[in-house]
Image 1 (cartoon, helix red, strand yellow):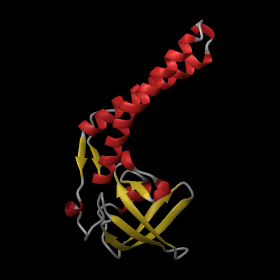
Image 2: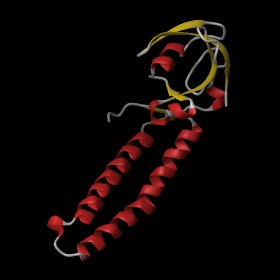
Image 3: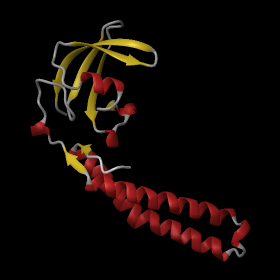
Image 4: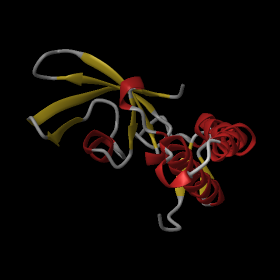
Length: 159
């Protein structure tokens, strides 16, 4: 991961800080205990518990490094910075699918906190990239794997 600026909402910052704290204070201890117990079983060369614990330890340490770097390079997008005239990071946008008439609400976030299952989409996703900078009432065409979707921007607000 480069030293690229990481755009976060205050909620996103809080979640990353909580994850980092949990990894450092809880998960590190748990995996160290698992390694200690596995070593107690004797020969570690064919000990799957030891191998699993060492792999988990490597994952945890890697994730800690990633989170620390993200937090060092974080830029927080506060609600008072969000322009309600144009779509930007932090905006909650209601779009209407012009083909089917369905309305969907998306919150535009940085890649670090995107969660499509919760309708939090990255500013670098096809939909996010297309609607950033657009205004209420504009119609956009989004290239997605299934083809082209036309969305009308119905509303722009903050959470």
